[in-house]
Image (cartoon, rainbow, N blue to C red; front, side, top):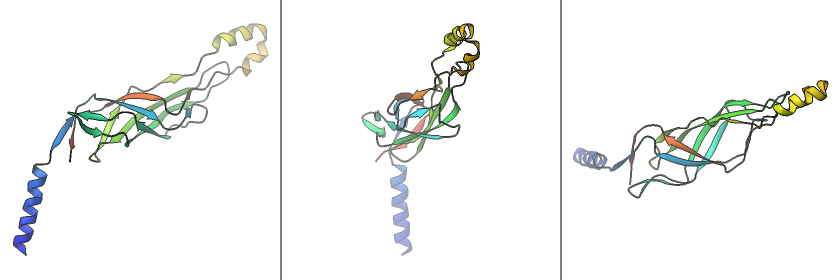
Length: 163
């Protein structure tokens, strides 16, 4: 019985030591699509976002991140449009995706800071003509449609186990 355990353990160690890995390099680009519409009107800081992977990430024709993986992100700034023509603000990051071996891969992206269309010119003109009404002119909210694609990058080097 002890010999059988030793043999099985040796086989396990042997197979683990020869498991093949491929290096996923830092700054490898990854295209993701947002899976839900997002607006500065109703988004809140801390909201979790999900992204679908648009294209497989391959090294030497081996898939390291597949299109069935889901990347997760988070809203880090959200502000509705305000009076006096001030636009809404919306900022989010894409944080992590799992590789084919299940390993979480940290992602890096320059924050996608998108500001709504400014209507300040309209406010100045309205202030000259209709002074009391200037308070009722609102800026526009930022809206990101479902399916919009973004480019993110692998945050550091990873060794991905392949089968």
